[in-house]
Length: 186
Image 1 (cartoon, rainbow, N blue to C red):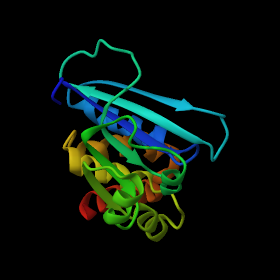
Image 2 (spheres, rainbow, N blue to C red; image 1 turned 90 degrees about the vertical axis):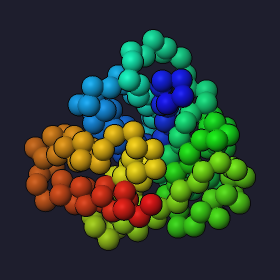
Image 3 (cartoon, helix red, strand yellow; image 1 turned 135 degrees about the horizontal axis):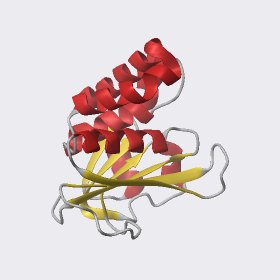
């Protein structure tokens, strides 16, 4: 956090849980006494439409409410967006790019990004653990690992608080498993 504020942009499609993982990240940061902001940006508000979610985390109060122009990290939950969007356009040159993909070299070739790239096949993780393509939790785990913004245990606690009553113990446990595996795969 060179300026004291760490900024993250999540790229996904509506319905893939980008807003949810942003909320989990800021809840974990809040629990550790950090100052946070999180907000989604939807184009056409329909399932499957490209969307972005923004997060700011700081040790001191955040006074800006401006759009994020140069993020410290970008997370791409839906890899098909790499073909249509310049996901690195608002990423610092020395920033961190975390992509739901199986090969870092391919991501570098597609994006031409010269900074740090981390690829984790979060779709495979979610299919195996949850039986469907919901890669958001594994991507959050990967982001937590490469940034150190919060401890994985804080995210697990936030996840359990947010999900247990909503989706039950079994699905919450599967989400925790996906989160932890994304963390460990990096």
